[in-house]
Image 1: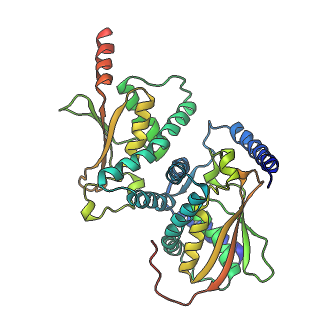
Image 2 (image 1 turned 60 degrees about the horizontal axis):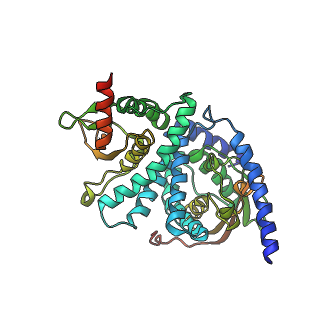
Image 3 (image 1 turned 90 degrees about the vertical axis):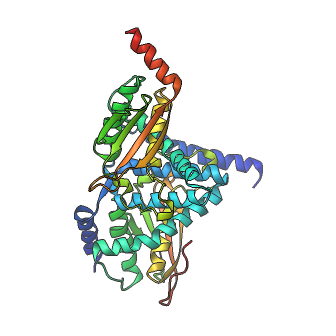
Length: 208
Length: 189
């Protein structure tokens, strides 16, 4: 192909693709267009994502970091989408409001239910916990014994971390499996907010 | 079984026998994976290959899931295989039913036409990716290939056109290469 032909073919593709994307961008997002897919589809995909990530890292921490990264890209989009659906024009910037938003709106959008609890740590005041007693998406992931400390919920913590950071409340978010009676998969998402976030909160608090 | 009966099997299984998850979570997650692959490989052909490989790994496991949920038995011929893929497989996992078209005269090749691919929701490819031939949903090819291999059918499965490249519909070509003898499955990694 000469370079001119190349340019022409690229242009042709481009106009064809952009014609479609205009259609795509014109589609309303306010209502969910597609309701459900099979849970096993997600489980299979998720398992492959873990396997793929595992082949590229050395330890469990790195693996969780990789999954966290994969979750972050989901988080950013979910935040935008839920905000537009809830007709919210302003992001929550206060820690508590933001957490409530994640706990209710985001969880409902992703998992069709609210998270089971939202708590503040009694030991460290910059730590908050969101608990899901039965995370459906982790149901079919079984962790081998030699990786007992691995929590596949790292993907979900990535989602939460991205939202926190979009809301100007950056935090280190980790996920921990904390089984309880009859709830073997109970997962706690732990948010540890950055120092400046807590300082800002204090300032705003005292300003009132 | 006729195509219509397979359709019923798929719909029944979807309605009564399948746990479900929010479609958007699935769509975003897949998107995030593809972005990760593009970052890791920096080459669209390699991404296609990796997606196909991951699909294959999924396919060899997924086939059991299909059989368990639907109680279907081994297909008598390749025509019914095609019907099962479209009306049971795609239905149970993604709640779509691609149409089976363009049979070759020897009955060993057909196309699956997908006009409403869930993975394409919220997705737009950059011109560069289109030009370099990224098949965004290439995971499907691997899944079909892997699942059919478990049913002793060696196949070639590939995208012919894709809505994301500007086509009206997406088309996946499935070609039966040969029927394998019963044997221990090869290591799937």
